[in-house]
Length: 135
Image (spheres, one colour):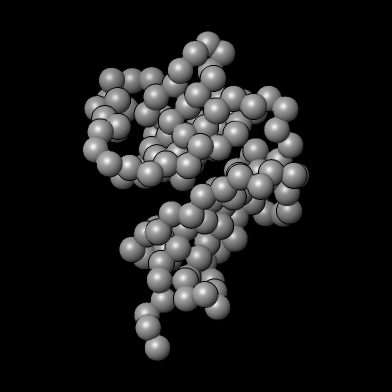
């Protein structure tokens, strides 16, 4: 990882970050890079732990070679100020279809959020959402 990546994501200050399983660090890092996440840190060789970051957001992933994407229940919700703007172009970065990876564009939910969902190659469900205006 470059000095520029470390400088861009100093991993300082308060933060809540999900910790998710991954099978292959190179695949995971490349996948999240397509959505604007930089590799901020990697630990071990082979990689046992990886941190990807985009602005104030961090996703921590740990090596779990036996994880099954089809049965994964791991995930995270990240609130953003404008989910439509934040996820613009995401659909072009994932092949359409079922399974992992996949993308679901933003839609209004009955619980008062407008949400999009991204499923990574390991089956981790990352949801991005914006609260709907009060009625």
